[in-house]
Structures are given as C-alpha cells and as structure tokens.
Image 1 (tube, rainbow, N blue to C red):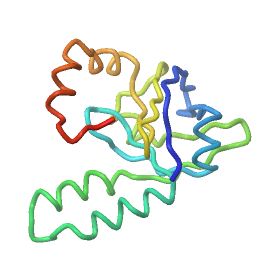
Image 2 (tube, helix red, strand yellow; image 1 turned 60 degrees about the horizontal axis):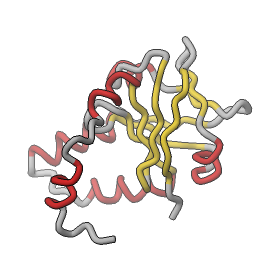
Image 3 (tube, rainbow, N blue to C red; image 1 turned 135 degrees about the horizontal axis):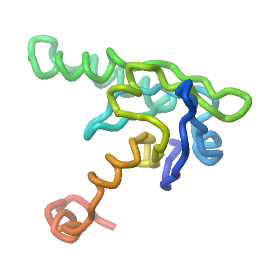
Image 4 (tube, rainbow, N blue to C red; image 1 turned 90 degrees about the vertical axis):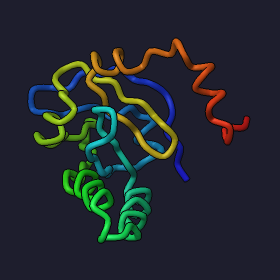
Length: 143
C-alpha cells in the first residue's frame, strides 16, 4: 500500500487549484478522492484506499443513527479530483468552504491518506506540548 508522509506548504489559486507534491503524486497516481475530514481538514485518498473506506462504511449498520450520519458526512461530500498537467487538483467549492481553504494551505501525509489544512487552522490544531502524554495513552503504539 502507498504511504504518504511529510508536510508541505503550498498556495491555492483563486480558482481552487492546488499543486499536489510530487512525492504524493508518485505514491497516489493521477486521481484522488477528496472529502471532508475530521478536525476541520480535508482527507485525500487514492482510489484504492477509497474503495476500502467505502467498503467499511457499507458494513456499518444502517439502523444506527451515528453510522448513517458519519456515512453522509464522509461520503456525501466526496469528489474525484484528477491531477492536471501542472500537477494540480481542483478542490470543489463545498470542500474549500468546509475546510476554510483560501490561499495558504498545508498538505500533510498521514500514512494511507493526505490531509489538506488551512495553514492557520493547522498551526492552531497542531501544538505538541503534551505529545509524551498522548504517546503514553496509546498503549497499542509500539515501535
């Protein structure tokens, strides 16, 4: 499976086009699925990983309200984004609005997905003063 890692600062143009870092294009190909993510960012998946996400969502019980709501959240806002000849994707308006994306954005590789953040939101949300405590709470985390 392709793994994404690293943090990249980019600018998005007025039309909503964003350069995808070459390393992400190499790992993910020329088409991505972009959807609403958690913490106010966007999640970006390869087509292969998206198929796995959809399969997982289909296994959730339709009788549970939280499952229905999360499926609508994740899948309802999703869109295909093809990489153009300049290495850019066009972020749909609804997703730009959700993540408050304007000009300055951060793309972060997080294993099987990429996250796209408004730069200010990224800086506010990612303060690591308590990272040792967080690591201790994750007992299943083993290096």
